[in-house]
Length: 320
Image 1 (spheres, rainbow, N blue to C red):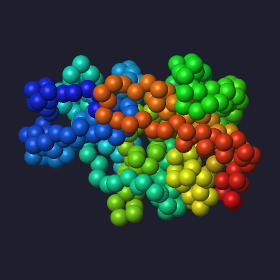
Image 2: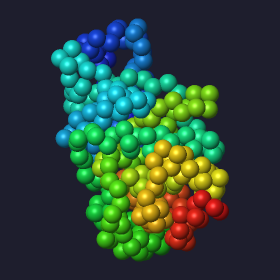
Image 3: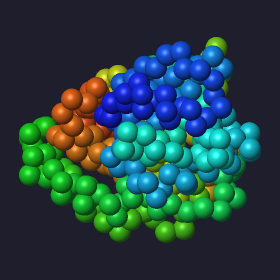
């Protein structure tokens, strides 16, 4: 989430006239994140998020994202819902961008998650995987192993501006993952970006999941590996085994990992660290001028990657 596209008062009011959402009282840009333009809106009938789709989000993928949230909500997963306009459409256009009005989800994200937060996140992730199993739609993971070399090509000549030797490290890791994920991994819909700022809590209990704009079809255990990176390292970038145990146990309380998944998890976690290192390095070196957002430090994921390079079995994550 960020603000890349400014919307005039006249454009906003004309857009909202197409919805039965009440009279606008306030509008404020949301600066967090890096992908889309987001505004927080309040009307006399409630609170909403207005999203204008930018950058990596292809317009052809938007029906998938919106249908997924509607499907998950019907299956009992708490997530924001697209508001349909007076013509029954979930997607509109505003300020030259595709746009959607989304219901506001109450709760707060946690900056320093503990084991209980990780356990609830693991349960929610597994619930999402099961609830979406009959979605009936498919979206390829454009940021899977097959897309990593092209992403690196966009900044490889400048990678060492971030840190000496970074380009060589990335090349080595790309070679490790050149064959893609291990065969035989169960597939399905994954969130692919379930970081702490995309999970809300109220009074210590998980209240919902947000930001589905990287969702796609891929290996389910890869989604868990992304969470392992996002939730289970402390502020010094050291692995926190109590969080890792809780995350995996929470996940398996809803959906048991297969033998193949358990064996592959260290490599999947290593690949997830590389994926976010690549996108963070790209954004660090290619920040749009004037954007109200601070890119994430890619070096955070160098530290995670170096940890995973020394892991040979899932027991390191659960028994450390």
